[in-house]
Length: 475
Length: 125
Image (cartoon, rainbow over all chains, first blue to last red; front, side, top):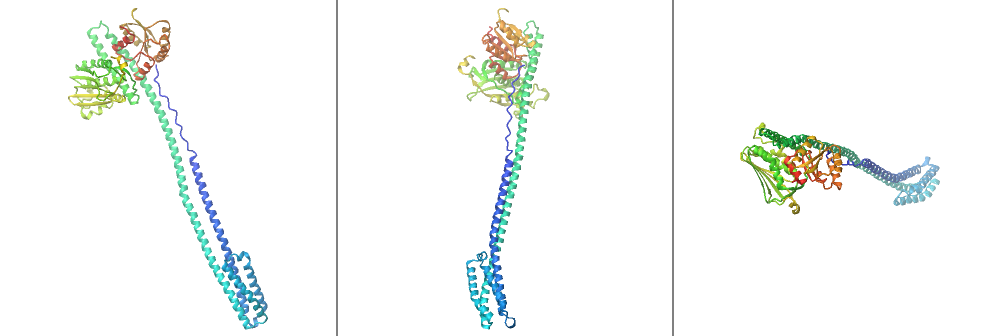
């Protein structure tokens, strides 16, 4: 048995891999987020250290001023006390404390914290202090009212200066505090914004990655399924083709025995008339059965998409003559006139699929004869007005096809609805096959019909004429 | 039929052998029947024939392979070959013609059509 060639399986598609895309995206997002956090944190820490240092210096300076002021007030109190409580030693001690406060204030670590104007005022206050000290010492020696008065005035002047400086320092401190608070607040807001900004970004990234991975998995699964389905369908299709091929051989081989032997018997000149008629009847039944088998094989092959158009050079006139021989018997049986007309305008040789064209013509003619009870069936083969196109026209005087049925009769297993279901002959496949084969050859079938008058099936096909040299072989 | 052409019939099916041989007698031609491609090669090596009628579906070596072998052998390269098959396939017809078959018909065949092909291919008048 010859094996029908099975189509070579296509190599499986390689599913593309994006396995590293997800982790890479997640890592990238994490690194970006962490860097942003660290950067923001460092900025805040730096700024708040700077502001705090400035602030602490100011606070220290203010504190020193306050201490100086307190000592000045104590000194004032000592100087103010008169008579029995006058204590020159206490005044001297207190003066030393004031001097030491001034000395601390002039230490560069603290003094630099003041601005130039404040430093000038401190110097001014110190100058006054320098001037007041001899007066103070004189007062310790001989406390009189005039000297006391003078010391008190000078101390008051120094006190008001330090007092003013301290107040200014407080304002500076509170301003700085507010600035630091504001800055801290802004930084916190900044941090919150960064976090708030990054959370959706990070979430979005995660969602994106998850969806990417899922869609990748789905795509992969889909590819795998499609691949499996493709392979299964190819295998099924190959199996089906193989089965159809085997079935065609196994059904047609016994049909060949029946038809061939009947043919031989019929050629025997010693047959009597009755035997000859009986053989003819068997032969016609066998022919009909063969047509049905071929129809079923054809429709199965068409349904599985296996129509193959195989073209070769064909002699038109002898081809049409074979059609006539094949169909004339059927027409004779029903006592129908059967006319064949081949236009002299046809080329003698055409390049086409002989078997497929024969199936179309014989199916249409058999169909016409089947549904015509009296009158005539005719076949004409003409060139179409379109160059390169040809027409097969099958006309009958049959029962006709109602407009509602004119489309559906080209579907498999469908016959016209007007006739009784059980009075029909045949499979209802002929027209479906003719249409599908005509379309497979690049052509069309057109039907015009009138109930009670008859039908005209027109097949239009593009056929290549054999070149003139080759054509001579056929003329 | 000593005056007729000798045609080698390569066919494994007994009934087909009978039908083909009987139709060849009507052609008229002499039928020499073998059941396989291998047997056909042995016969062809020893006896001259005027043509071959070849079933493409054979046990063992198939008809297409035999046809290629015959076409590649100078002695049989020009031998007229009529091939046939019960496969309902346009593709097989194409393969047969591509392998060098002089003609192809599908089985079951109309006896008149078969005789017409036989007479044309083996030039029996």
